[in-house]
Image 1 (tube, rainbow, N blue to C red):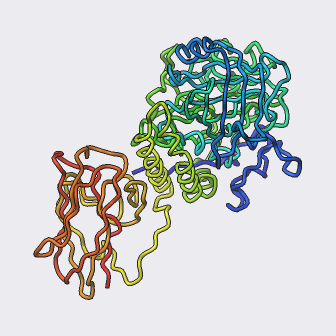
Image 2: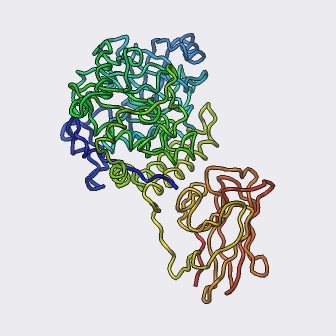
Image 3: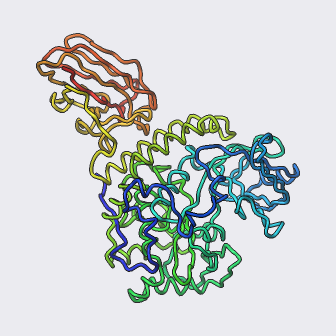
Length: 563
C-alpha cells in the first residue's frame, strides 16, 4: 500500500565531502551516539549538552515587570522585546545559574497564542557578549501545535543521527515572577553558535525564511531578501541566493554539485519524507534555514510539528520521498500562487539520487524501530505528569498522541521496509490464527489476517501485537480449531488512531455457547485478554459496534491456539 522508496547521495557528487564520523552506514552500535561535525570528541565536555538533556526536566524562572509580561502573554503577535532576569535550575540547587539583563519576546507563527506564548530568550541582546552555557539564545516552545510534546525531540534526534544539522531539545517547567507559565519544549536556536558547532565556523551567511513566505525554496527568484532574512551578524543583500537559484535552475551539473552539499540536501529530504512530513523544504518549501559554508550551501531543517503523523496521520503514511510535494496541502506559493516542487530534489534524482538505498540506511540505524520507539516511550513517561499539569490542558490528548506516535512509527517503518519491524515471538507449541483458517464477514472490506489497515501488527493503547485479525465491526469470523488445541488465547481491542468508533465495541467468543464476552472497549483503552478452553471444530469470534453504525478499528490481536 505504501510506496517503498529511499535514497543514497553517494551517486551524486557532493559539494562538500561527507564526514564519515556521521555516516549511519556504520554499525548501529557505533552510529547511534551523536557525533556532530566540527565537535572535538576528545576535548572538554560541551557545556551546552546539559541544557538539552532528554532525561530530565529543567527549571526556568523569569523575573520581569508585570506590565512587560502581560504584553508578552496577552499580545504575543507584537513580538516586542522586554528585559528580564533568567534563572536556570531550582532555587535550592547550588549550581543554579542567574543571569540578569536578558531580553525576552514571543515567537512563532501558528503557535503564537495568548496565555502561553512561545518564548525566545536572548542573552546578548542587551549585554553584548553575555551568554548562558555557551549559548547566545534559547527558545521555549509552547508545543501548542504538538499535543504530545514529542515531535521535536524524536524528529531532531533522527536527523542528527542521520548526519543532518538539527536543533537539540529538552523540556522545562517555566515560571514568570513566581507564577507557573507552563511546561515547554526547550529548543536550541539556529544561530551563529549552532552553525559553529556543526561546521566549525560561523563565517558564512545564515538565512531564515521571511515569516509566511513559504513554497519558494530555491526556485528562481529576483530578490533574495524578499523571501529570506539573514539571521546572524554576517549580512548579505540576497544576491547570493538569486545566483544560487539560477545555478539550481540552469547551471551545469558540476556547478550544481559544487554549489550545494547534495548529501545534506538528499538526506534531509528523504528523512523528513520518511517521517511523513508535509511541511518541509521538499514538501512545501517551509521550515528550514540555509547556510553558506565557504561557498557550499547546506540546509538546516526546523519545526517538526507536522512530522510523525501530526495532524494528517493517514496522508503522512503515504508521503513519497521522490515527490513529497504531491502529498502536502500547502504546496502552493501564497505570494505567487505557483504550485511548489523542490528543484534540488528533482535535479538530484535526475543525477542519480537513489531514495530506496537511503531509506534502507535510515531504517537500519538513525530511524530504527527499536531506537525511536524506546526514545518515545521513555520521553512520554518522563513528561506525562507535567503535560497534565500544563495550562493548555492537553493531558488526555497527550495520552492519545503518545500512542499514535508509536502506531505511526511502526506503520510507516513497516510500510517502508515491506514487513513487520517490531520483534515478534510465537509462544511455544502455539498454532497461529492463520493456520485456523479464519473466514467470515466484516463491516466493510475484507477480513484481514495478520495485518492491519495500514501495516503488519496492531497497536492498542500503545501496546504492540504482531498477529491477529483486523475485523471491522460488525463482524463474524469463524475459526476451525484443530485437533490437539485445547485453549484459545489472545486479546481484543481497538487499534489506535480513532476512526468512527466513538461508542466503542464489544467482543465475544462462542462455540455452541458463549465462552467469553468483553465489556465495552473504547478507543485508547487497553485490550481485554482472554484465555478460554476450546474443542476441535468451528468457533466464532463476534465483534459488535456499541451504538455506532460501524467500528473501523476493531481487532483481535495475538490470537493463538494452544496445545
